[in-house]
Length: 252
Image (cartoon, rainbow, N blue to C red; front, side, top):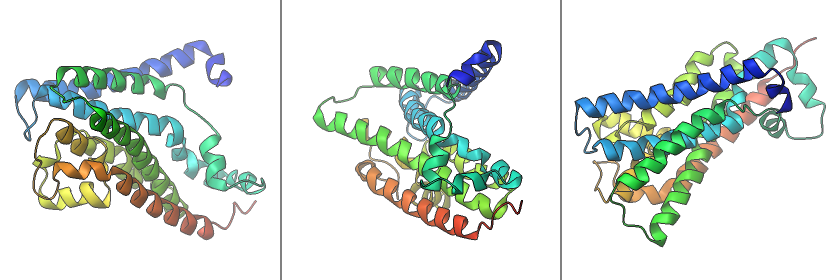
């Protein structure tokens, strides 16, 4: 962390870039809902809550495990072999090997929008609401973190196929920001159950606002976010195990 801050101008530019990315993503939602007053049963205030939940969980997951994106570089250079020499689990070493402070700027934008969404919407506050919000935040971080691990496990086979896996990590983040009610049934199944990013924001949003939800994605499913997180991590650990067993070393 000190090393990232040692070059102050570079660090400031990276932080500003991450902050700008968060603002641009929020501006997109703002423009859409100023043009179309209601989309998928959600108005602008509900969209703030949807954006805040999805981006907060994704940005915090990205801070913690987003650097797994660099795994193809470690594989190509053969430097991944050094991690195998240490008496610790490989995945744990990679997760704890770095932390990107600049990504906290994007998380700050998301948290600010989430706070705004929670205050502007008519939410029936009480113990169940607080519990649901806590489940959503923790479960959302775990779901996105598990998706990053899934992508990393596939990199042992794809190596230079980061664009394919990014369609599920960063594409999943984009899908989480959208009202899932506008999706056709195949996409509802994909982002609701196969890659359950709807559990990170859309389902909790309609549950907090007392909305019924579309077919296939009723609002009461928001309480099943821990189950969705378990499913993602079972898949992630399975893909990681298959990937690491496939890895034969750098050959150097």
